[in-house]
Structure formats: structure tokens, C-alpha cells
Image (tube, rainbow, N blue to C red; front, side):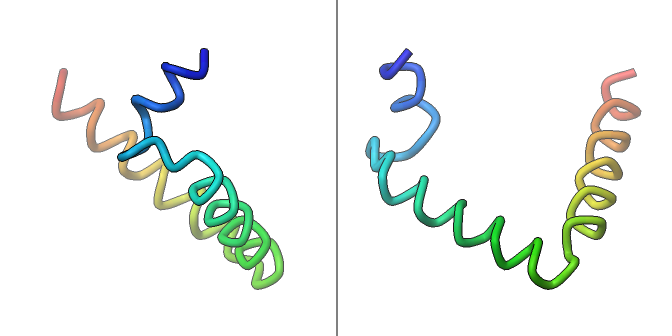
Length: 53
């Protein structure tokens, strides 16, 4: 599983990425940006699925 995680992040900097995404998540929750982030994510997912259809 660790090798799978290392292939997801460039250079295998798991700790740096974990800290970065934790801070991003805390800022998003603190600023109520979660709804905006989710809606943008769903929009991108919709556009990608329409492009493949």
C-alpha cells in the first residue's frame, strides 16, 4: 500500500503532502469553503464524464 501512495505523490513526500492537505482542509472548514470546493469538484467530475460519453 505504501508503494501505491508513493506513486500518487511526486517524489514520495508523504509527510509534506499530509501536512499540506491537512492545513488546506482546516482552512477550508474554517472559511466555509467546503461547499465551494465540493461543488467545483462535482462540476469537474460532471464535465469529465460528459466528455467521455
